[in-house]
Image (tube, rainbow, N blue to C red; front, side):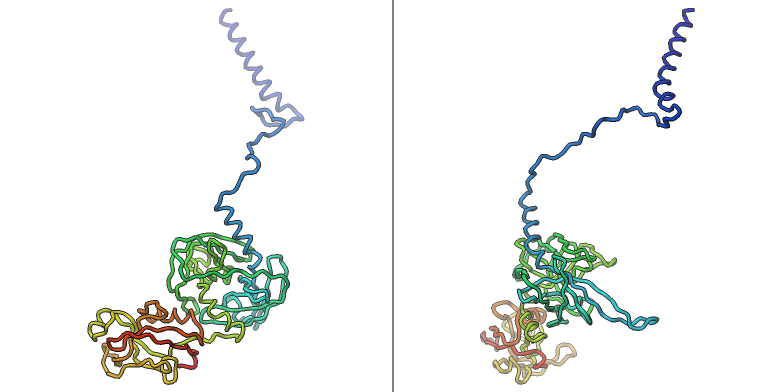
Length: 382
């Protein structure tokens, strides 16, 4: 009897537990799963306090975006392409650009509007305008288009001469058609880059700021919101951002803007010389007074250098199997900047236009001279 009493008590407790937790909650008409927890009358969450302030870096990001977004536009180009089955069919492409003056001139990439029959611009306020192609510079992948619109806000063009690897940059554009997108990164490198069309960008700005299809032609800006480059291409195996994008230096564009707007083309400047680069070994071998520079081997008759009195070589010699002329002037600097290669000379020309005057430092024999040269147009000095 003493053993039966605890057994009955245990069975009663077990039955009561089963009744209240399982059988009762799943009685007919109440198909509910068993629930160990009761439903609260309301949900309590943890919220941040009001008025959380932004740090200085966030405030600058927002300031750069608000300052520049009214100047950045979406550029839609429509061209006709040939399809084997359907013949001529329309094709649409998109890119970016930015307003450079209140007259509605917009700077973008040439490849954004190349071969376009119709160009349309969409402003940040979603208003659309038909655009006219004013000038193109395929060799630098630049183009100017124009719209007629009121109250335009031009972007502020900065200086790309003294950019440093590591400084912060911002890119604003329309990647994949997503208007008004801003990304941030740093200047990763500054180096020459060859574009898919064969054009070379001297001192291209490499950045890890996210640049994707549709960003082409948009501005790359510095910490102050000044435009220092034009986003133009990405290096990727998948056709989208892989952390390596490139921009054309804004100084390259500024040097040709006037020609593009007033003439529709660029009067490319040239010295009118043929040169060979000088290494320390070659300078020692032929007895030059400087261990770097460009030795003039030929002067274009009637060209800029010829008119300024620069001289070509007159002594025939051979560089390997290549005949050259020695004894000409040795160019070592232009406007105080050392010239060591033909790339240096090309970059210097990119920063000027036909009609500019430059000061060229040369060695004539052992004598160092400075000569002022008025640059002529390249196609006139071929």
